[in-house]
Image (tube, rainbow, N blue to C red):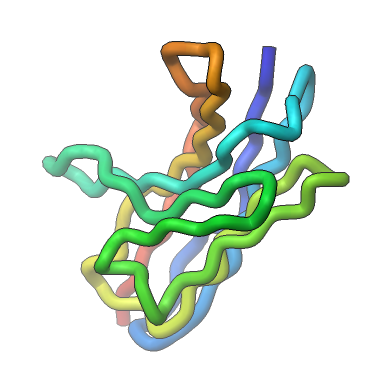
Length: 117
């Protein structure tokens, strides 16, 4: 069982930055793929970025060039550095862990990011 706790969300002005963190506890194998998704009101949940234990990253087009995902395997923590934030980035950001042998990923409870002047 893996438990995920996100932190770092908040209110920021357009053009500002935030850094999200997600700490995983429990049985966290190193092969897990960790990632961030987001869900805005009235919209479907969408991928933001993922990272493998080896550091291979994948970004949604909306995140490329502005967001950076990173991971500390010793701390079982994944980060999302978000720069040049836009109002359309406003959403609940959720941490996600996928294991190769498990059909359903683990999800965190989410952290609210609001970009507004």
